[in-house]
Amino acid sequence: MANPLFDTLFGAHAGKDAVFLRLTDGTTITYAAFLGMAAQYAGLLRSLGLEPGDRVAVQIEKSPEALAVYAACAQSGLIFLPLNPAYTGQEVHYFLNDSGARVMLCDTSKVDALAPVARSCGAQLETLNANGTGTFSVKAADHPADFQTVTRDAGDLAAFLYTSGTTGRSKGAMLTQANLLSNAQVLASEWRFTADDVLLHALPIFHTHGLFVATNITLLAGGQMIFMPKFDVDQIIAHMPDATTLMGVPTFYTRLLGEPRFTKELAAHMRLFVSGSAPLLAETHVQFENRTGARILERYGMTETNMNTSNPYDGARRAGTVGFPLPGVELKITDSVTGAELPQGEIGEIEVRGPNVFQGYWQMPEKTAEELRPDGFFITGDLGQIDADGYLQIVGRNKDLIISGGYNIYPKEIELLLDLQDGVLESAVIGVPHPDFGETPVGILVADGDAALDLDSIKAGVAASLARFKHPQRLIVVPELPRNTMGKVQKKALRDLYKGLFSDEQP
Ligand code: MCA
Ligand code: AMP
Image (tube, rainbow, N blue to C red; front, side, top):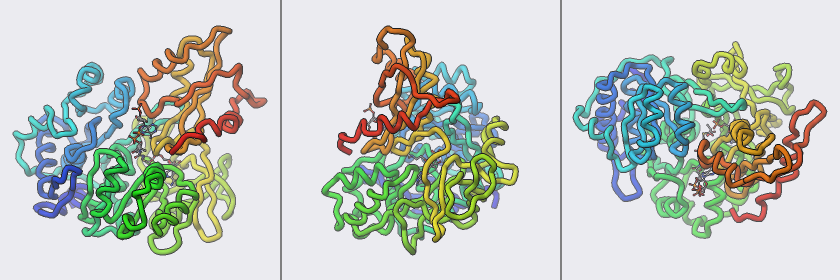
């Protein structure tokens, strides 16, 4: 195959009049029409002087056009670099600078903020809006609806996905065509996807879950997606009768359970509900089964590894577990200090190896070496335990990470910013249980001196730099942070102290 990723996921559907995307306004887009749009985009990207291996940064709202940019990058051998539209200009500056992206696509409403950012990073800025308008689509209209697919090898890079880090610096995870393809093939087979499937797609498409899991599997199977701009419980309920499957983060399922219109009858024809990206409470699993009779299939993955484990399609889906290693994935539990493999049943670090595991962090060999062993095992930073039947249970994290509604938040990034605010001596950011988002960040502050802290101005300082979902939902001032004898802040003590902060809130 000249270009395995493009040929397998997209090229295989050339000329097909079958529907690929169904939009919430009732319109549909066939595979042929989608591929024509992607070819025009590929032609434009090449005319802008981009060479295979160059990066294209994309910070646009979810739309068929946004997905066609992904296809266009695959077809023209470019590295797709999707970014959350919630990121601020400061955050985008880091990604552009670090990745060396040659082109950046954004919404027209962001041009004023991002033009100076793109200029200073040497990237050409084009616009592409959720309704398909923008300079990018205007220019693309001059290009033909077919494009000579650029030859690429399975080992060539296809995407960079930035993940935050425990040091506060984001790292670009480099994923090859083979990383993405192998995982899509395994999952489509394990979860029995076929051309008859219609997936309710309500996830964002700038992360692994919505892009590489949901979309790649559907493409591989030649199925359809009901492509929603975002998760909206009314829309999910309205379109469920036309769907066969749903993939979501646990918040999707708790929100559905909070809705009396989500009934057994409504869900009866659905063949599969998948959950991942954050822990699904065993309680939610049970409530879901009580309501619908269906058992959610929980799986476990990471940006760096795609999907690692899954509960079985046939066989018992065990609440509170993430199932078994996927075919081709090796998984072991190791001692966090020595790295030695632990006997079955003991709790330790989860390590994985397989064709799904990324190539390392872009231009960060030291960070890569810290997490990716020379023998190919990736140290996930998650703590787990394998039960007597082989099911993996994730029991905690060996990394300071908060997952809110499926979005990762690294406390260090917020702490560094809080520490810079006027009057703040030091800070600790902790994840506190939240009925809707699972966990949410809370900032604990110590003032530098006796003067009261101006919390509004501190919040404004955070808001100017960080995406909304990372903002601490509460700021709490304390006289001092609890420390152990080594002087390390005891976050567990803080988490215990504040664990009930949001328990009265309605999901
Ligand atoms: C939105 N807000 C959030 C979040 N989402 N705050 C914290 N955490 C969030 N996840 C902000 C909004 O900006 C808004 O702020 C306020 O919270 C309330 O918004 P709301 O309307 O309730 O939120 P929403 O728009 O309905 O979004 C919630 C959501 C969404 C549906 C859970 O966050 C979502 O789709 N999450 C999925 C994330 C995902 O795809 N993760 C996969 C990562 P304001 O009111 O001020 O405007 S991939 C991964 O983790 C690995 C590989 C894996 O295993 O999959
Ligand atoms: P990300 O860096 O966004 O790819 O997030 C990956 C992290 O999400 C993993 O390291 C886990 O901590 C967490 N995660 C993903 N799926 C699950 C799951 N099913 N249960 C618990 N944690 C999960």
